[in-house]
Image (tube, rainbow, N blue to C red):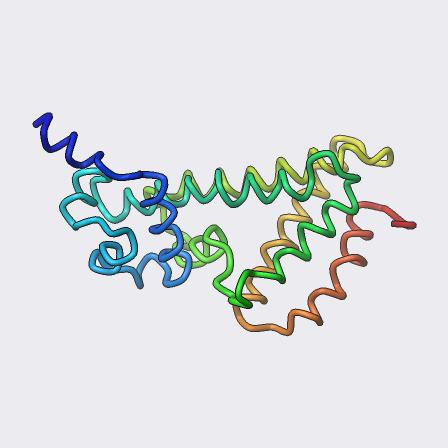
Length: 196
């Protein structure tokens, strides 16, 4: 028993999760086979099952990993230590500039749509990702002098809805420049920043 556990852990789990995260993001949960996971992660099906238990468990871990290395990092990069309005504009505009001009979208958004109305093993990780975004938005809004706690919480929910809406339209191939011009006025309306 100890030998099989040791063998299962003889790989870089973070790298495997990053690879799994990327293929789930591109193809969706239903579109990813165990063979695709083997090809993407470099792991055998035995290693995948021994290390993660199932495709669904691997997906849940990949979503949690995405929350840490993509969502949290994006919030830190654009919002930490910056004026709230400028940071929010930067964050929202960054959604339009996916590397390589691709439009694979957000793993949270894609998965929430794919699993709408279902309670899955990954549901908690999906909710945690949305909560992470909403909390980041609330914290940014609370740095604005005109914001009370209730205003910031309402504004954060509006920001989350706008953020997710942009991601859906981007994934669907909507014109990015047309979307870009909507960002500053929408953020002004939500934040109450008139001169930003």
